[in-house]
Amino acid sequence: MDHSLQAKYGLKRVVNASGRMSILGVSAPTDSVMEAMKQGGQQYVEIADLVDKAGAYIARLLGSEGAVVVNSASSGIALSVAAIVTAGDPRLSLRLHQEPVLKNEIIMLKGHNVQYGAPVETMVFLGGGRVVEAGYANEGRAEHIEQAIGERTAAILYVKSHHAVQKNMISVEEAWEVAQRRGVPMIVDAAAEEDLRKYVQYSDLAIYSGSKAVEGPTSGIVAGKQKYTQWLKVQLHGIGRSMKVGKETTFGLLQALDEYQTKADNSQQEKQALEALQPLTGLPGVSVRTVQDEAGRAIYRGRIQIDAAAAGVDAREVNDRLREGDIAVYTRDYGVKQGYFDIDPRSLQGDDLQVIVSRIHEIIGADHNEQDSGAFL
Figure 1: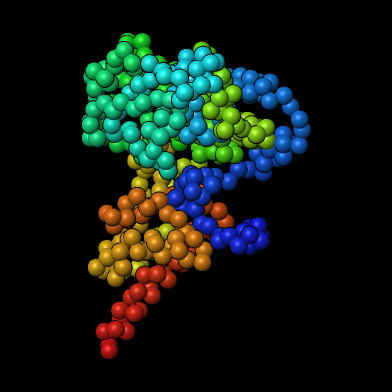
Figure 2 (figure 1 turned 90 degrees about the vertical axis):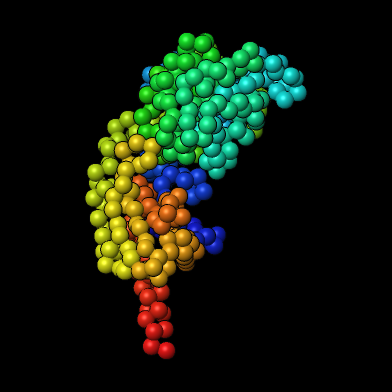
């Protein structure tokens, strides 16, 4: 792999074992996606026409009435909220945050009000909404949402994410039943989900990242009912102007979506690739096992558990030293306080797995040698 660009600008080589993470640039698009970006970027096009035609193309792929390409799933939240609180009124859309909006409450389960790199609620407020939390951090029921509905309710926002609390939370289907029965629009944030056709069936607007599962350029998709996607397009001349999408991004995303439809499920090969981590079990205090994604997706990761007493170093320190080395190795580190971190195989390239194994050998081996030599002093 050519690391000359990193070298030119003084950037570290990065081994991404953390998954589709925004802090590392999310994903690495294929040559054909980059070629579509190059061709699309080097031609002129009427942007309004591209917005409509790309949206119609994506809507056909996803089985929705309409769709809009946006510049990220985050902006998708803000624009979806703005679309609904303004009801697509051009004047209100242009004067968002200047004119009072009476129906601006967005109901969210408390366990869904998470931080994913920015808080969900910040995007809601950016779109002119006001968050009303329903339920509790460890319990979100249908009646909690229902009891929160009032005359100022604009929409329900359901967050389908590994960041959200998983236990004791109603499913998207159950939330949609309440939304339909009470006549309240529902937005689903399904940014990292892999099933692109599911969530448009249980929402008025569903938001996906274009760069996570789809592995397109940095982008997002909002798909759903025609009325609401039309209202969202009005926002592109309001707050959406600061979130605009370049033509090259749209063409790259369309190509990535075409490839995504035919992409094989690689989860079994990725599972097998994780066998390369097994030599680490020879290190004192280290165990390795394969675990499935916490939000139920068909994603498998290698979990490296470290017994600090036996290894002489705890999981947090091993993880920190991996990240801070000459080659920056990023793991999925949500569990370091519980003594483990995960290796996500989806973003690994070339000899990345070997780099991870040898770095952990260095870190734990070095600590042991120091301890052993200390015993003889």
